[in-house]
Length: 221
Image (tube, rainbow, N blue to C red; front, side, top):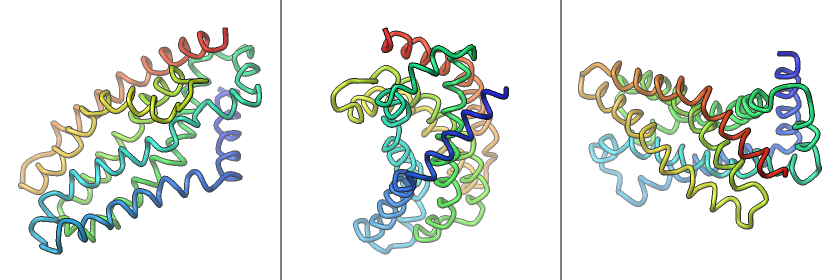
């Protein structure tokens, strides 16, 4: 656990030094959401109806921007090889990097989403569910993204390849996230959708680090 905490702190320090990456993710999220009222029109009812889908799709695409860098920087400077040789389980190292990635991308997106929802006229009853669904869904995106980033490690145009690998896997997360918000706006209980999102997260926690670790070992051989 000491190694886990140290690796999380290391990745957070590196992310703060290279703050442009995290800022780019949030900026993409903000700009994309802000463009929708201009493209769709200022009709409040239309914006309110499509707001959950807009917020979730743009958050998903924004999270994709930084996934290819999850292991690439360590791979380029040789740090990844040293991490593989440490006594700590490689799956635990992957989990630490996923946590650091979520803290620098998923958490800022979650915090920015309620503010952006104002521009889309989202109903007030949808705000707590929006935050809850993103808190459950964005860690799953980071975990799934780690598998894609590990599989694409060292490949040309890794960012495009990671997106192609990961996007189909994230569709259930997005569907349940949007469904939870729609249920809350319709006066129904969002609990089933949130429970399904939680189940996906619980399934991804042990499986994704293990799969990513196996892909990293293959890439390092």
